[in-house]
Image 1 (cartoon, rainbow, N blue to C red):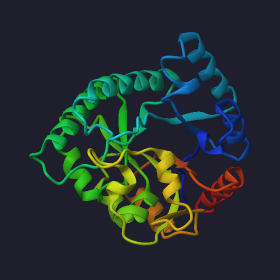
Image 2 (image 1 turned 120 degrees about the vertical axis):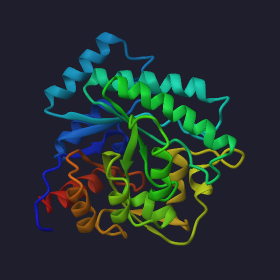
Image 3 (image 1 turned 30 degrees about the vertical axis):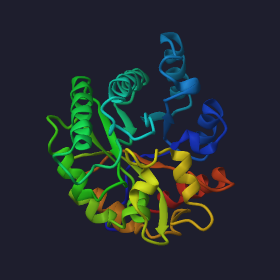
Image 4 (image 1 turned 90 degrees about the horizontal axis):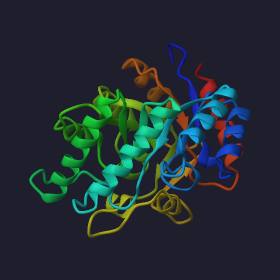
Length: 293
């Protein structure tokens, strides 16, 4: 790669599986500069963290010399496909974004559900309406809801984002999801979505056989989605496999070069959803990225 990377390295704290505080310490220990944290339920639920707790947590993270690259506000289920469920999900998402801004990051990553092909259908309309409202709210705070790539090809996601009134809903680019599920090319995907990428994941994987994305990510009237479900699907005898960095089909040299070519200056955040030794895998992933610096 012609030019060394200068992006900061992040880690999803929850990937360690040891709780937020211990996960923060471990992220620092393995050499990360930033962290992404799930903020949907439990100790990071916005309804649980009062103002004093938020100030204390921000101070604690800063004291470790870390930044928050993003919060994860993925509410699972069918994303925003169900118009009846959307008001509550929109409200919760706004509160997660409020928390993110208070903690010093303008980004909340999420899944919105698979964008259907039928632009005239009720599901497309429900998703479009919800995302437009969320996008306008985020824009008012100079912030973003960032949709994770994977459920649909990059070109189809871009065509959906182009219909929204702001770029307050943008993209969290995950190359492995594209490789594992849709078979889309992450390098071309970066170019296609260049105007929307505000956060990225560094994850590797391989598609073992063609899989219906609805089986992975859920679809209204089909199945519900959760990160636990996706991790289970990447296990033994699966349709795809999440692998350690460099062991899958993501061409990281080309992927990093593509990010550089569009001027992306944000975080490269490591996600590890499977495996029995997450700390070891994440430590190796940090070293893997550092080779490109």
